[in-house]
Length: 416
Image 1 (tube, rainbow, N blue to C red):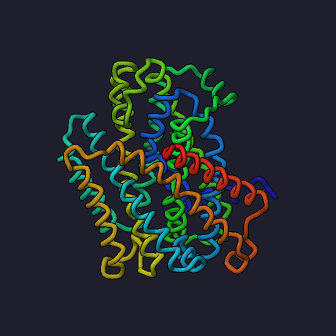
Image 2: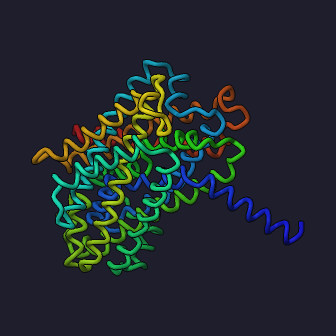
Image 3: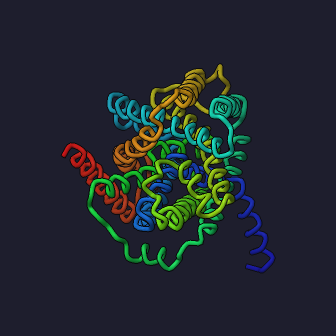
């Protein structure tokens, strides 16, 4: 192959990748939502660097899970909800999705809490910010197309890298960070295990699996696009874990070392507490990142929820469809937006408890979704020659076993 031919092939492949770029990066980035940023902030402020080690197995599992998602979508042309209904039956599907719908309403409420909290950092009342943002989010989806929405989502994904700046402004001890990764300090008490489950639940959220597969389908990708889709997923997973890492480091190097970790209940508290310790710029950078993440997730999460609920029960769904073509999809999407934003406007609503429990419920529901995925992706009648390789099955089932054990530990400990 001549040098000119190699250059031409590289250029062609690069433009093919750019055309496919989107589902993996967006799905990964949206995992760093308000609940995620809150969880990472509290973890860093409360435990310092002790929980950074969890991000390494989280990256491996995140990549494998998203790869399975994408592969199922590329091969079958169907969403995960559709496949669960076809393979598990309507009754099991109904109970799974009732719990997922409840969890996602709590998650959406958390996103609007993030919008309210981040705007308070910039001295804007939640009674002004939340209704305006809620309407703009609703309008973007109802009046937009998947192609236009995807471009906006990619821009939001890039903005989340601002947390790298927040971490460096905190002047962390990088040798201590490295030691925490190489020599993790694991303890077996209720609070520590609950935080581990919350970290896993927010890094690999149940609803994310449905969005990933549906976005592959909406983009019209096929199995011939698998190689480029895999790169898209890898980039998204690296960005996701990098943002989580720098949030933990930012809070650990400032809030934890100064002994104010016990005062941090959410991401807004973390942003405000950074000002006297790392300067106003660090606080504003952290707050801006929270605002972007909140809008990003408050847009995608209700879309994903409406999509998989409608798909599970045989209704038309998708941003590219009109209200007349998919009324159930748009009504459900609208209802989730109204409920999520409405709860935030209630005086003295227990927003911190909603945020913490939404992430913990995610961690408990995740094994259920992953078990369904593992069963379906290994069915030759569904996947043909594209079933899982043995190593993927080993990692997948091991992950599920660990998550089940952690969830049982949390439930038993809470009763004791």
